[in-house]
Image 1 (cartoon, rainbow, N blue to C red):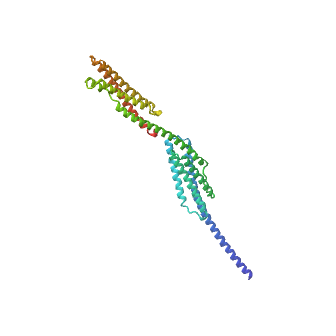
Image 2: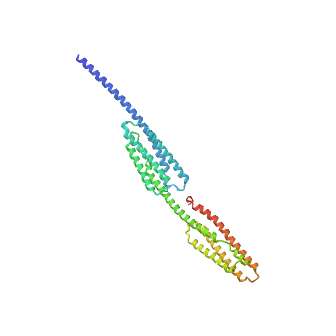
Image 3: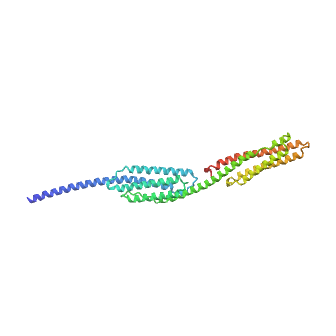
Length: 342
């Protein structure tokens, strides 16, 4: 009877053990299945992030030696970075849709933070590239380094079996490389800005000078005609000529004191020739008037007339040279006041 009771008790224990084992096996199977599904999901996005980081490295590998005037290459790099930024944002959006098992919630949060910092790094590098002329490049580069360090820390803390995103070694040198590029752009931009400021100041001064010269530069031939018609006196003509010479001398002084950018020196010299040409015209006109006065009572009007006609041709030649100069000047002004041309 006792043996029968023991046999029954043993059976109960065995059955209970089998049930518990079955529950444990079922639980373990469920857990393992859940773990595998979760890990595989993370691994899929780990591969995507790895590919994105590799693309970023390849895109920016030679940024420090890039010609700052190579707009085609620069725009291509910007487009690739924009695409990488969009790709990692899509990864982040999809990762956030994953329902992490309770036991992995902390690991998952660190994994997400790693990708967020990774995205922030790419975004920061893009901002630096798009704002290379900023004086705040140094601080922007420090922020980029902070993001990549954060990303590394979170990735290491969220490591789970095959799920481990490792920042590519060349990626750590990107902030330094893009810093060199940005400072090169900034230096060139500052040089161009200084030249633009010099050119703008030059053209402002020349605009005023040319405007005054246009008012001073007139033909003196009407004075001769008035003398012939007895509508003025020789003294009045001399006074008019002296006034012109004083005015032109004042303009010459202004011209001599204008600061000239080296690239505009030759063009500037052309106007000096025009000033001297008009000065010579005025002096020659004065001398011819003197000759006219000295021989006024003699019958040599034909000879005098030819002298004044010759002077008028000289004036016309000076006037043409000035108009040609203005056309050239306007072209230079349009070119040298556009910073993209400097």
